[in-house]
Image (cartoon, rainbow, N blue to C red):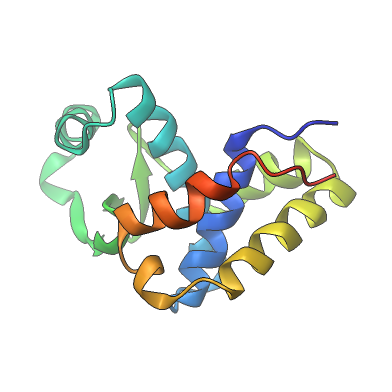
Length: 146
């Protein structure tokens, strides 16, 4: 079974967030939010400015959107959780994508693959969105996992 890029990005971002000090629950929410954000970027031609404008339009309470909580990921937050595409994302969203969709065995393999990559990644790449994309994501996005 070939695993597409979406769950790979979610898992890499989860372990990136954990290595940067976020709890596992928040890291899983960040992971799925980042994967969704990148899917949106692709649609919006990789424009972070347009992404932020789109998020502000979709926010039910734009004055409560926090761009500082997950600044390192360039993610919006609402009530201390990642907020993408007008929706608050949680650990449960991550688990549905990784384990619900792919099953327990494949989900564990996806996470093992991601953790091994992140464990070898220098902190400077984890702290910088562009370096993470170029130096971590691009070289590994088409890796075979299973």
